[in-house]
Length: 477
Image 1 (tube, one colour):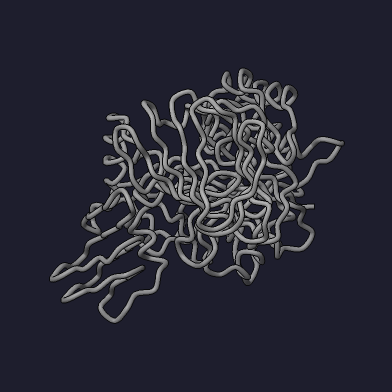
Image 2 (tube, one colour):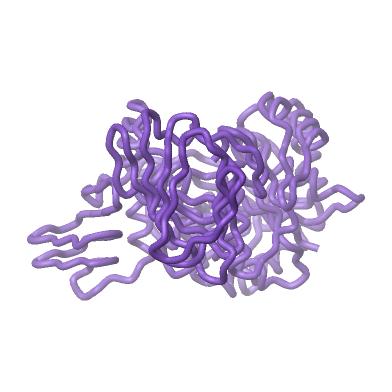
């Protein structure tokens, strides 16, 4: 039995302003109608002898993970929640320990949630071919056959072949190498012995844990303790924060794969892309006759080899080439295609200034739906709120703000103090400061309301929760 392990903890800063801390790239539909997470889950669901996936993610992303997988008909075996980020080695260690519960020792297929695979059939065939190596106790890393002298990836140098077939060759790993300069990358490409390091792995749970015990025993001990002290809440397994916080940070490569003598590399030529930057997204998206990629309401004149993404308004370009232009409700990026790797420096500056644009979009997703902060000044804020059928905000109150609700569409059940009543389209109500309240959608269609907040303090942390069907406490989004 193969247990897929989907790592969904990345932040995707180089795809800002679309990808942000609270809504990173794996949750975005960047290449087709499905998100990268959904594509990853669907891709492995087509394998034979495969279980429901284990998903590992930031606790703040748990509801997005659950909802996105539910919408494509996939129920994860569990969603493991990291209270703090500790890189990929601890994440996979916890997944391996969890998979061994009840005496099992499955083969783990470890996949980042944010990769693109063009040839899904070829990818599945490679997994089937290399499975016997995992059963024999080897640790497989998937190496991407390079198509260019790429300087943005680490490389794997292949050693002697272990298994040859008409399809591919499984080789011992001679060594891992860091991201090269251009001249070195050209040499790697010409040699035919180097592969891009994809960050995808396959091994038996016990084999990985045995090597982690050899090379990083403190990490394994912290992961054991974090899982032993975890608690389960509906579909989520919460790792113990104090224990997991003591765990050393490290990647699978550094912690195990570069040190073990059991590593092998499986070459892949399946249209792989990690969508790590706007340039990478450019490579996997169809172009028009002018070499442009245009999304949204875009008009171009004498524009070539340019990426334009207009999320909310008309974007027009005249006489430009080789640009990336990305428009969102609260930020616009304009960059030369050759400089898009430097977008992360913009994010770093935003973070240093504590600006919200590095962390959140104007439109914010919640387990009950979403809201869009459409206007804000010193003492008022206007939000457009959507609540899914059957969903409900928490029973809450605010110390510093009052709220007016106007129903735009759907039906609202309002609890206000000791009152409970219904509102329909074009009806409204008022929630005074300090009064307990709850908003529920009892209908079959989405409930949309306009909320006008007024008061001396309008931040989201002015929420005192008394009840919440999603298990959130005060201060949690």
